[in-house]
Image (cartoon, rainbow, N blue to C red; front, side):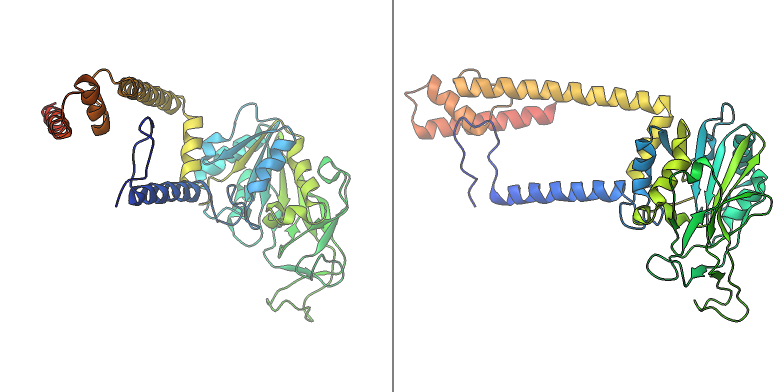
Length: 364
């Protein structure tokens, strides 16, 4: 199969149709791999743009003017000058080790605000206990047959306390959430009096299940800081931010702070590319190494490009037999220098030049 026709002065290499198709396929594959390695499909994931991801959470936090960090290690919790920083934990998949719980507790004791959003996993309650909070998540699904967004599993809750977290909020919408056993914590948002906890899991109000108004958001001081418990992490996902006043509620939680740490240290939702970028950002040594490698690549590319440009210029002008001159370029050069030579002689000398060049490159 012949090459794609090109002008003799073209600076682009002559490629066959299969080569062009292979190049296009390779390019699409690389793009797909990079995309897959930089996004996540995990629920509550910071890099998941689907309905159940929390990719929008970073934008909401950044729009408040807060400096946002996606944390992949508990060591990123500040333990000094923690005042002014809010850390958000969304339904951790793995338990925090004792040393990690101590680090988070120290963050709160020194003035940090910790937001724990949980529904059914046990690790949220373990973290609340470790930092000295009194609130606990109930773990049973809350339904409301009277006040809901779409059906009874999307109950609507309303503020019951005037606080910065509830400013400008009329309704918070849950999605198969639970409730908070407040203890000595202050209740900020409650369900309606028609809500009930589904004890037997049949999604219906039975004789042993009572209608009552129950907390879904609580706040309490711990040391110099505060702990806020939210009984449904779904409030923070992309789709639910558009329900009721959920977006404003999340803005209120984060916007009053100069820094926000989205704690994904115990979730498997940070994709490889994003994790690598975050690791480089945290390490001055890695950042310096990447800079040195990038400069080296650019210098090498610049040198190779410079050689190619000069070879092409010589090829176009018909002068100079450069080491990277193409077969067509060699023939043009010989025709210009030896117009009296016949075509067969030109081709014979061209083959000799190409063969000699290949042998020299192997020797090098």
